Image (cartoon, rainbow, N blue to C red):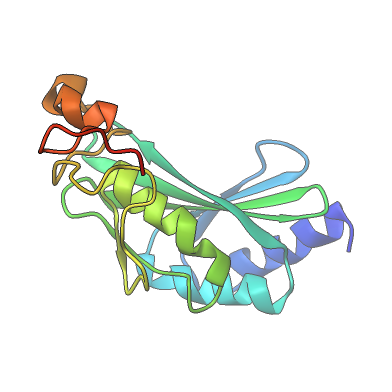
Length: 170
């Protein structure tokens, strides 16, 4: 399947079904799909998988800022040169998205990173442990949010020093 065929099938999938979406073509090889209902997310992902419209290449978190009150989660699916991006907005307070791990097992590390760096709860994630940050990282402290203040994390935690003062070498 070439790029244009993949984008046409993806467009038909999200535009002509009953889901509430908005689509854009920011570049000739891209289709951005803004989902307006979280309930449509899993059925659209399943539809992309059934149509064999690529693989999940990344999940990106975006902090739109405390004044907006929302975070945006982008799911990038690639086939040939085509990129289909599903865009979900979630509330900044108690953000949550469903896990894709039962559909796409390779989503697991992306979802762990999303939880750890942005504080987005990934519902029914099979392994919600830290992937990058130390185990003693402060709760409710998300380093990729715009309101993160580096001073809120102790120097010892940032350097990898355990609470007993000994170096944490792995």
